[in-house]
Image (cartoon, rainbow, N blue to C red; front, side, top):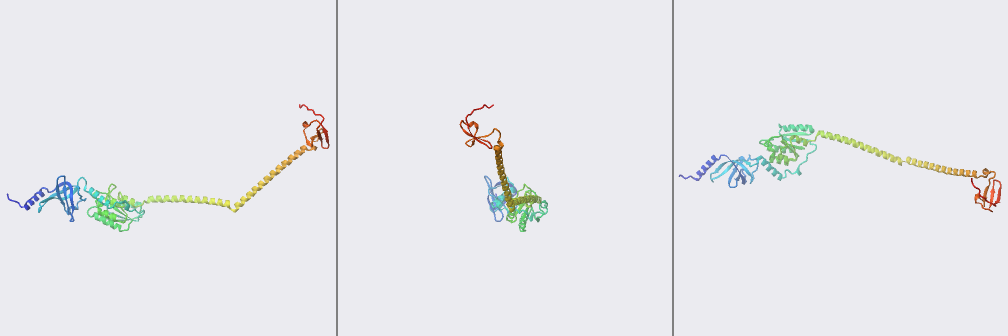
Length: 397
């Protein structure tokens, strides 16, 4: 048998392997990962019993949607190649997908964790929106439904605000760079708010808003930013980094702009409240004026003079009333004296057979006399001194 040279043998093995295993899908765990400065990625793929070397050249890494990590389980689409000078074979990777999780979902979670660790989602640095914005920059496509919805809502809610459309590529090749560049440009326009967003679509259509470049542009902007990408169920990295997340572009304008109708109602309520308060104030002042007027009247000179006059009048009435009472009492006494005098006047009391009986100058009842008492019998013109010689009692019928 003719002997082969090492080079010929390795060359034939290379030809055999590369034609036999033109494309294989291999599952395993990443280890010994090296991201080379050239852009190539070198690593090993292993399972419980074996290891195989792998390489992904720079031309294919641009299609990699997530970052490779040691210990990560992946499915690799590759062909087998042999490095003839050393006789080593390895997998030349054209596609790498995470095992069990979609590459986009994994990329989203990886970037989310990375940016959260950098403080991009910190609520304490979120910028507040102005209550009455005068100028809003819209970073979106000029031809999509989103800009029409934005204009319609803005016109209905608050037509005093100026909208500045910055035409932007929102998906496909170059969209990440265009979105980032236009956010920076909008931030230089001295606007009150920047709205970044687009209408709905597939996750691939919305993927530009899940890039780190767009996240950096939003985070570094000095102007408050509202992220409004897709529909209400869609959550993008831009939503977490922005100051406010809106469910849709229409919702972004509802958040950014005040409602004209609400403020008209508010003005009406203020007017009613003002009228009521003014009415209450006037009513209170009128009551205070009435009280002051009453107090003034009560403490005025005329009021005091009237009080003194009324007191004098009262005293005068009391004096005359008291004087009349005294006169009445005196008159009653005189009448009584007069009546008594009339009753006791001997001239009026003189009758035949009637005299006044007294003892020791005092009128006495006949029943109180005793035998031998000396008494006086007196009429109008005659006084007789007598001695009691006998007394007898008569039966009263």
